[in-house]
Image (cartoon, rainbow, N blue to C red):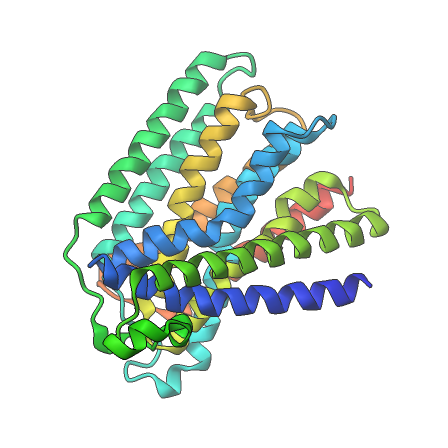
Length: 347
């Protein structure tokens, strides 16, 4: 039964991701936003909702003995997965389609926009991880750091929204829900109304959230049946399931040749995950946000994520271009950390 639920939830996530990528591009076009704002902010935040809700629910609403620890593990797991596995999956998609791409595996991205994303991620995440080295009882300094993270993210969003618009009508596929709006089809056959765009985006997000939640529930049930450690589940297994929306969105955009949206979807989500869920953990679970005891293996994932990001994007900053093969290094970091985590938790 769990296998059937996994397949059905997988289909829901795929359908939601396809509708979301189509709808969010039209949303950015209607608001005349830059491509960076669409990928790094709108798409990233929208598809980050499933994995963001897991730590927030665990920290704020769960009363279990290990709820704060599981929440912190999930907070750390999301940026780690994005910096490693999501990069690897996207790089693989680029290489698979390289023969049909005019530039091969060279990705059509704005290195300056991606560099801004990764600099913001590195600074934000380094500050957040630095807070974990404060004493566990140091509550108010962690609250101050949480405010700093929120301010940095606000500045980051402002920068993307102030960029020049770059989403052209010619680059957009017809809105999937446009056919449902008979009035708009008669008046403007090719341009959907904003209300229909909003309906498609919200419907897609609903499918993604339902699919991801169901997927995580099935994975957790299977994990319990196999006797897997709760921290390992929160840190490694659950984020794999909840990161599926970002991965599928990026694969869809790579297939369409929209590399800037594909990469912005991932790097923007990394910035969001390093700031917003982390701020929640610092405010509501400050004692658990500490590099002590068993939590050290969870915080090791942060160092691995930062290292993987450096190996992927420093060559891009130096050379002014990003290649699909360069993203594959994320898979090496993922496998290496997974081996360390499993062996450590297994004793």
